[in-house]
Image (cartoon, rainbow, N blue to C red):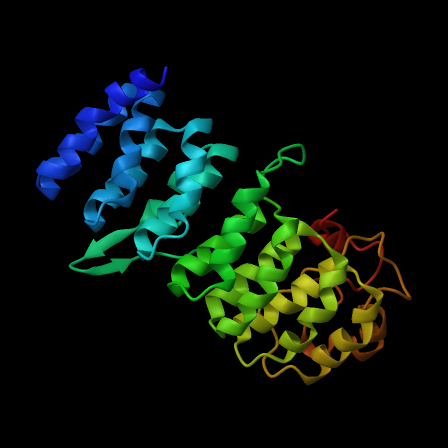
Length: 298
């Protein structure tokens, strides 16, 4: 068995030693036609000194897919190249949520010379089914990427991936990502907390209710409201009263089951929301309001 594996790998090893980067890229791309049998042949190129070769390795592995691709894709999350990190992240999630590769950040990646261009969208409602659980080592690798010192777009994309996978084990890494002071990283971490639904995180988010970035502040308001931690009632009330710019749409909140006095909305109703939303549009103006039922996330 061992000799058979070596026999399959020898041509790849010889090519890796004696070929140009373009030749290796061409060979790597051709392995996509071999399916799962091509994964072992790709492994020698995952550590190739040429970035272009390593990028094509990730694309080919994602194209092949399957459980055999998870381990090398997870190892690629420790690479230093931004594109490799983003594509490896989306490739891992794509295994658990088919189609994510096209809908995620990888689907919009383009190169303008040496510059990587990506298009972020606020549509971030994808999440794996409740019965799907990602491997612990994958969640750990994504968390390490978020809390590390890698490229900020890759860290933000990893935070989004943790939310999609409901990676509860990476909560501390998401909180550590706040230290990046990057608006996109913080925003994606907050949305991830909404999907993970661990109410113990809420107190760690309270200071973001006063963030100077309006996008981050609004996301923090929504996240803290959805988590439904009783300790958040007063901080939420103060945040509403001291907000610099009222949001252009009602802030999402908890479902009707989170009724007063626990609801942070209750102390605000007598103040008529201070212009945040009228009685007909406010998502939390009454426990039975149609708008509240519509915005609630059960």
